[in-house]
Length: 323
Image (cartoon, rainbow, N blue to C red):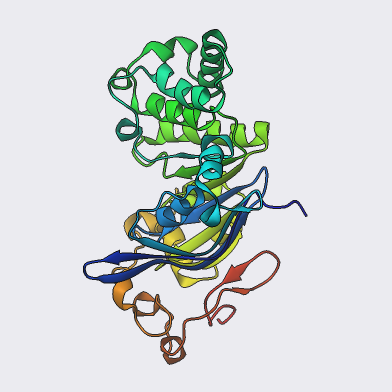
């Protein structure tokens, strides 16, 4: 079996706040192999972005991180600053949500794509850097001439393509995409997802793709990890998690996506009552229990472990397999 590009081993992240400690991520184990796209799904506040931030050690000083985050076998959490600086961009890079807020409005986008190249490959001349910038823009479906544009002169989809070009500038093996299509319309979203899938296939990248939209992950990813209250509650092949979920929460996420041609979904769209728990005061037993339609008394006594249920599938629910 190929060694993973990225491996989370018992990763927990706790934020220190004025209102007490917030356990944002709790004991996550997950891996991404070369050429694989692993999606992480869940509502806002479930820990998706916090987990992604640990890959390049981007969490704030108020965060306490436990466990191991291995990128190409090296633990990012214990890495020396110089090694971490070399890893960022060249070994692993990230595409953030909302390109307009990530790009510098007073610099042309070509200069911004060139910046990590100049930093990590200072031996390259200006003509070679310019050539690389043009190639990167073409890779993401933009003409090289757009390098002369400022961010405000580009559409939302074009700006997001620039962000992807920046992330690929130093030829990383691992790409982290943190909800990169959330602010885009469905047509542009489809184009961006196609670009990402093509890049993974062409360059054998590993990708961790964060989204609240299970349907997007089902189309793009090889596997999906569903998170709730900081934990992975289901993990499996993308199409199986979307069409045959094991955990009630994964089922609720899947049911919230309307099926075209299904009158029942059209006239009575599914949803999930209640809100995610306050992480500072989690309920006893299963954290999903207060919202779960299948909860029984046994669910309130102990939080279920993430256990295997068939080939390549895991779920943290004591009622898996029951009618």
